[in-house]
Length: 219
Image (tube, rainbow, N blue to C red; front, side, top):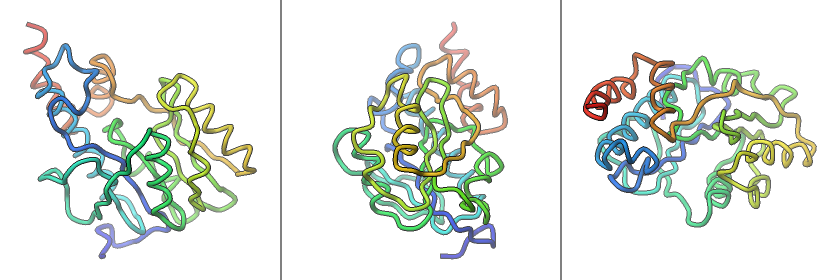
C-alpha cells in the first residue's frame, strides 16, 4: 500500500470504531439529539478522525470495525472486524492482530490532528519508549500505543470508569514499560462534550455537523 504522505512511518495506527447507525452510536447524546442526529455526529467524528490518520506517516492504517464499512471510509485503510466481549477484550484483540509498534485511538476525539499524534508516530517515537498513553479528561484514555503489542496488557483493565486511565497506566508500569504521554483530550460523550470539542476544532466536519444541528436542538 502506498502511503499518502509519501513517508511511511514505523507505527501501525488502529482506529477502533462502530458503524454510525442510529440507536447504536453516541446514545448519550440522545437527548437532546435524536438517534439519527447522534449517528450523523458520530459519522462526522469518524470522518475527521480517519482524515487525520490518513494524513500522518504510518506503516499501516486499520479500522477495527463493529459493523460494515460505508462511504465514510477513505482509501488507504484496511478493515478488520472487531471482536466480541467487553471493551478490554475488544481492545486486547485489536492489539493481538497487530505486530510491531502500534497506536490505537477511537472515534470519540474528532479534534485529533497529525501534529497531536506525531510524538507517537514519528520515526523516533519508540526510542527509549515502550508505550504511549493519551489520557482523557473524563479519567479514561483516548490513545494507547505499544512498541510490542501484548493483549495481556489490556485484559482485565476496568473500562469506562473515572479510573480507567490510571488503571491502564498502572498495568503498563507494572510490566516494566517505559511510558510517555500524549496531551489530554476530551472525548465526545455528551452534548456538552460535543460543544467543547467542536469549539477546539472549528474547521472539521464534526463542528459543521454540530453547528447545523444545534439550532434545532435549542429551539
